[in-house]
Length: 195
Length: 195
DNA sequence: AGAGTATCTGAACAAGCGTTCAATACAAGG
DNA sequence: CCTTGTATTGAACGCTTGTTCAGATACTCT
Image 1 (spheres, chains in turn yellow, green, red, purple):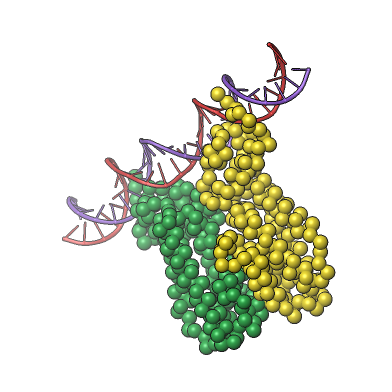
Image 2 (tube, each protein chain N blue to C red):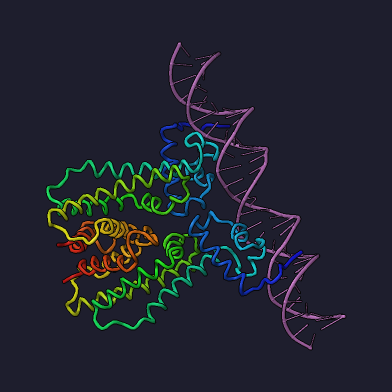
């Protein structure tokens, strides 16, 4: 027997990626087997190879599309007028976007080491690309006298680390709403680079 | 044949832990085999079980002794007089200690999921213990009017995430010295919770 | 109705996994 | 020199791994 009723490529493909994302984030790339992913989708392991050439590429595609979407979504937002307004927008955007995709964020920061050199370089470049958008805001604000960061590059990395950390503890329905978390972090970021 | 010349338990044990720490941090817990660890030490896989009951316990022992040492080292420092001085000491201590143990720090934040529930709870409790030391500083400073953090708990997590992030990019012999990094981060932290 | 194609199964492959254990080699003490 | 105990080997255990592929099924188009 083969081919279940009503099964289609356009359905199975996304389901495989979704299952892989969740399982990789929860258990780690190396700890998850192709058979586990297949079972989650309700399919045999062999069928996965209709959708990915191998396991590493499956991970890479997840990371790459996450980074692409992160950058594209930010770039699609209308830029605010002043550097402080742009910084506030960045803080709120980064927290909100990452909270919606906690699994992908965790993967992006933890499983890069399972990529081959070429794939690793691709994801690293995208990450730098994104960080540079924050770097540019800080640079512009410095030039305009809005900010005083002793080192723009370090401030970029420090702020991103701080914001990304939200995904490790935030729980929906907890003590604080997303907006409130955004308010508090914006207050800290604003002051940390204040002139 | 068995037992190489001059090999002793007091030497092999630490070497196993050191090799496991490096390999786990570099490749991930699940991706590293007992045979790889043994090979790194120059021993057969079976010999590892003279020093650990199983693979998970090996990981747990690494994480536990790291957390114990982190807390003990901080507690052994003479407490500074005022909350701002204590905060500065914490910032510089956390960066310095973690830079010396980048592998262990990475493990502590990434491989908790490979622990069973009991071991997981133990490490989590130690982490909270450590975070509470920063929380107490912020609380005291708030009461004394030195700081204005909108939410002490969030400020704690934000600052720790920011400081721990240093280990992901700092390279010895790079553009900035450790002290300079400490200066810059202290400046940002100080302002972020300023009254 | 029949042909063709896309989708999936189920078994197989060699390799590697964590772990156990009898046999063995060495070091130390008497 | 001989015994005792510790440290280690090397083979073996049953199981799982990523990946391949011939064959079977269901859908689509003519």
